[in-house]
Length: 106
Image 1: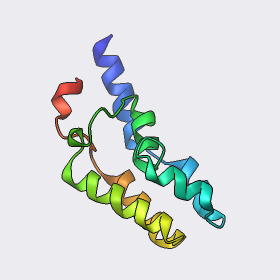
Image 2 (image 1 turned 90 degrees about the horizontal axis):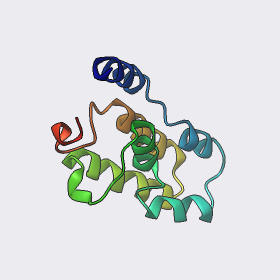
Image 3 (image 1 turned 60 degrees about the vertical axis):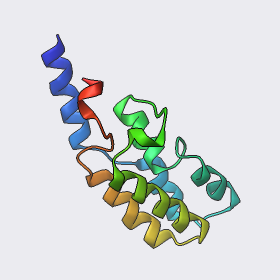
Image 4 (image 1 turned 120 degrees about the vertical axis):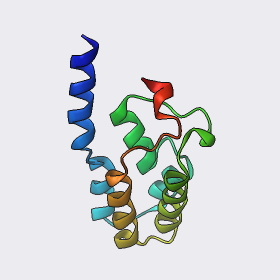
């Protein structure tokens, strides 16, 4: 059962598409998106966490690259720069993992 779950999870992670934020970035960014980007659990990293079925307790749980992309994404949304935010979103999708200690979750 565990092997099946791992293979299924790997298949899902290979196809990560942060569709909620991708849709938001197609429309003009508003104060609503600005507010959401301030909370990492509701920003692009938060959407990836939900897709992976994990929750963030501390920022230290994330890799350095994930933290940087999280800040960059929030900054791009605050500037209402949809194209920069979309580029960062795609970088977040391509990360092999956002978690610092991946083995802690296996």
